[in-house]
Length: 441
Image 1 (cartoon, one colour):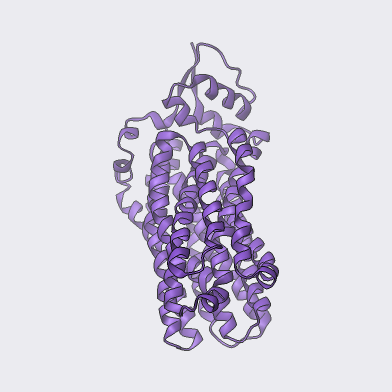
Image 2 (cartoon, rainbow, N blue to C red):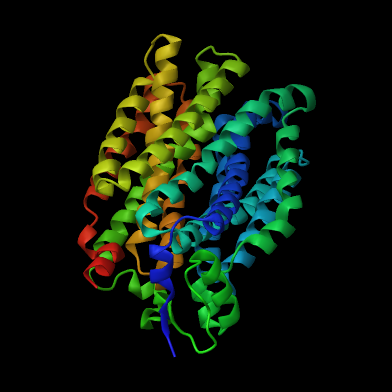
């Protein structure tokens, strides 16, 4: 009889085709999610004109999806620990793709908001689960890089929305960019067939044969034997009460700091996603030029996520996050001042790298901070609590735009949370992270 540490096999494995498969499907899930999030901000000026709503009402309409995401983060993050991540990921993609398309067929604000709320449930549910999935299967030495590469799909989705948005809006109205969101539904059978189930879930359910098959693909040097006995970290006692483990062993203060960081980070991300096109249009830029700023924002986000992940695997992750948040504060604050267009594009790119990019890296840090027993719950709650910042941002910025204040004031409100996020992530006690515990063990 052999005792096999499944998590150690995953940690020490060399990157291979199995890892690439997990990475591709998780990244595509985030691409779809990113597209569905971006379309509301891209189409917002046209929606406001057709439905006859003001900036404050439009802020509430945008926030309906984000309100759904808050519930989705919490509910689906915890549900996956009970029914399996694969089923939850497929369910969430179906939910947000079809409901976003349905929102494009609505003609009044309340019906539109209801569809966006339902889409938000799926969008919020997919995030913690694909992060936990990648964290579980990625080799330890390149985990931050793979998670941030995967999560850069969020920016790719925004880039796709910006690239196709102008053509679809001009040809089919704002509804076109929403109806296109249904396309990912055709891939669901392939995702179900190729996405592996969580090792922890298989172990808990006694599905040893499936676990052995996954380990043989993940680490080809492993040869399954009938009498293998498996050790999976999530079978520790905290599995019975994963919420309590977020505050156990000195992790309570750091848990709150992750929540504060996520709140501030998502405030910036969704303020820019929802209102950047409108703010640039009000500054005199055409629809095409305003969408170009969205494109640059997401290109910067991709570079920030991948570059930040690469640095985090080589330096202390907090030493990467703190300077990036401070750069976000400076770049966003400067956007409200009259500057040459090329300088504004540079600033928007830096803002994308240091807001969306840092949110991605913060998720990667959180995914490695908690024990596997409560990783999905920890990520889900962090994103769920942080989602309040995402909900508040479109509403607050919409109200400020309604006051007709100088453009600089709008961007200053978006910049201040970056300073708070820099302070809160710096206060996370890295010595209590699961990374340190594993190395000590």
